[in-house]
Length: 304
Image (cartoon, rainbow, N blue to C red; front, side, top):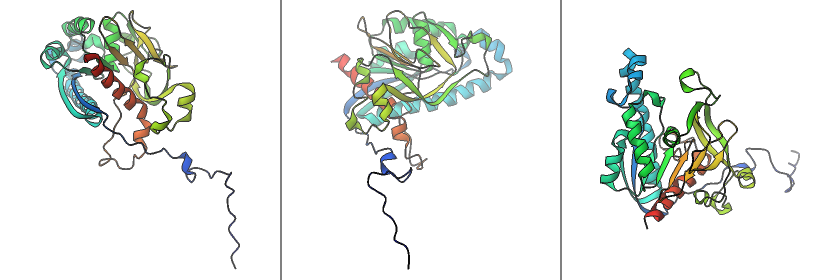
């Protein structure tokens, strides 16, 4: 005769993974935006005409392989941004252009919003005229802009901020083997009142990290070894972290809306048909998705 199996008291929680309350709750992604016309900007290097004399000199025989790598990375980065737009908007329209084409494309395409990709190489490897052209554009445009990772640094530099490595060195002093902020990291919201954070702590949204609602913490994907030092004039700091103080900033003045983020908020969706075991990913990247959706809604409101 077998001994009776004792029943676990209702007040006693079973250890993970048996306790269902420890699982990430399923959070369906609904398309709440009817339409959006988004200009996606590839900020990486493409051709030899995009690079500076310094890059030509230092890369020398490696120029071709360097540019091939940047084109590969840019394809993935821009596709990921487009995927966000397509998953959040019922009637999406997107056009991808290179940084060197931005001003003319914005004038011709008349987008509701501009989303700028990350970068890979330091900006002194860029053809100087492209950087000057971007600086002129970003100071004048009235199209809402979302600048991601390297583009966050590009915006900061255009408005007078200095760039340093995460361990506070001039970029030219440490080109390789930099300290890198990588993978999912915690970021502290420093200005909870900005509309970009609307709904970020809504308990009905399926939010699963309790600490985030208590302490205004975002959990977002990071991959960078360069940071913007300080906050440029006319911008407001929105989020920070212990490794990188300027994680997110915004300019909402003079008819402009510019949001720039050091982290990769566009890493919001994953193709389950290619990686069906990553069941937790929609919740891992949930915070970035909310910010991306809020930016699109703010951009549309700006035009109405």
